Image: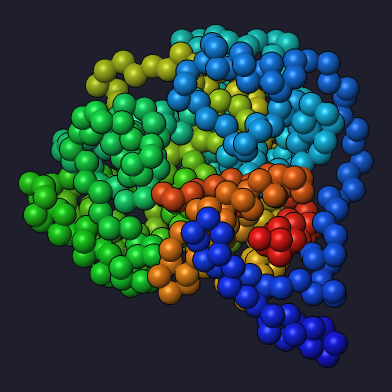
Length: 478
């Protein structure tokens, strides 16, 4: 409309440079026609009333945490939230305030908080048998493995059920070393593959690493189209992998592992065509190719069921967790019969992996995602959400990059678009403001200046609009 374009032109003319806490960034002056400037957006209606909370207060819980839990635990927000109930894409605090969960328990709640079908499967199995281990037969783990294998391409048909993503990546690395007969692993800079003593070596973000032996691991240049030294040129990034093989190893490696969209690293999608080039190099060097689908799997990217499919490759091993269980402690490693056979050299056992309750819950998750067509839904809502964020990017210079796929997006804030200086202070301010508005998002990237938008996959168009409107309103108040 002509009137709207005129208002937007006028608004753009009123951009001003703002300085706060030593950081400079462009902001858009409020316009009388902008709902963001007039009043805060309202959270969408939701037909659910939380149960009255009668438990300890947030202050009491925090005091107990400090006293009895490890000091390495951290929490979001200056005053941490005491979350006591969840329903689908929403969370409720101790006072009954409802929040839009745009981070899904760190990309873990796929179907929705307390999804009735998943919850029912867990409860019904719990009434019959909670635990027995795989030394006895039980149909739940076999049914779940069959359903999971049916989602995999090629000959990826053997499933190992574990309890977490770190555990899955640890097992995948063990498989690669045993099968190849080599030790050296390759992973990407900016990657996160876990915090166990083994996977911490694969992780390449100093904020998550302790000074312990890392163990024969090479970190290659990250094929980051936004910040990477080669832009989107996959061939130049891949050359760095070959250089590491040629100059940093014996010429033989055990394997290569990568997320297709780096999660903790700030929703960085790898340069197009990169994995196809690298997989070929790694296999020629005797190694296996591992796809870490802990965050990207199960249709979240919208365009594909698995993140690696966006690169047109089939890995030798696939690891997964988080969304596989909708909040249950559940993970899996899927590989080929040939590779899996190396584990039979010794006893390989997992006490809790694939217990009846988690297996029943995981199987229910797969059914719900298919029944509710969540991959298609992620593509549709993700496209709308991305378009709206890119509209904001045109109006706010502090938004340096909008990236990702489906419902796995990253919004990177910078104080200078040319230099791409991380807007750390501004991100912290916006983070608190969004919480006040009723929006919970994640943060990522080495400098914590990337908002991670990865909600439960039941997140709808009204939620998307509220989320972007909240960003708009918060940005207008900086």
